Image (cartoon, rainbow, N blue to C red; front, side):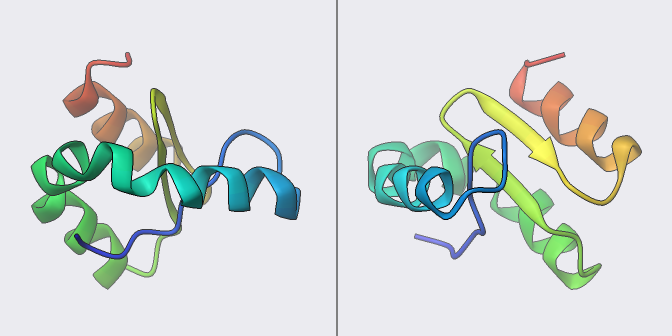
Length: 73
């Protein structure tokens, strides 16, 4: 499984930890977006993908691109 920084809305440690614990349940989903995520990581963008939540903290444009790939927009 690829390494992705994940957390739900909000920035509390509890939310981040709860979502990080869920990663293994969505392993196939994370693999599906491996190419996009790796490109974003290379761009030093904080990627957040948690269950059906899709947020990118630094760029609304990238947020829309990733969420549209996920079918969230």
